Image (cartoon, rainbow, N blue to C red; front, side, top):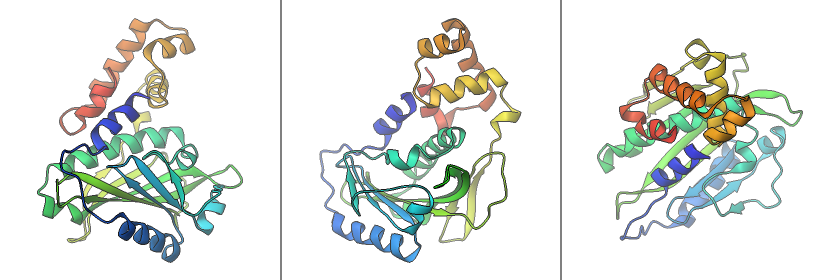
Length: 247
């Protein structure tokens, strides 16, 4: 999956200077989030490429079953959760997380903790029906090497179940109580039906040849659709990584 590979390259911490933050402190924080907010809490360790998933009653509501609590997985991607997210929302989630990382990474280390992501996405529930789910994501940077060390993601069933055309993504400055970036791009109003198909397959990890074979079109046509997507979505500067992932 091209965009996942790009996110791995961007997010996974590689530094000669090891981060000395105590992971047990953040495991306890994730556990408390799962209990107090009744959330599914995921703590991901960028230094070790490992995650810990803390379950709750919300997990059952979303049709998630984990054999252990916490469940330890050898990846920063919680696949059991991600596969229940609406395919369109999942791709936009990845794009937004790249935007968030690049914005926060450009700040001074002491300023970064003020920001987090607040999203509303569609996820399948225990009855395989899509429900609105609130997703929060927090970054923890190392004071030793100033690299991203931990992310904490929280998933809760949203109070607002009003049907929406797509996901809602916000970058919030919690210190000032302000929404810094509101990203509610409706791709259906920007891209053609065929371009949406191509974008969806890109997000699911298909190569250009696989997309061409699946849609019974030429690789050149796929390349042209990809170029149109780049131009129409104006993916440059802060989302240069996503632009790169389309090639």
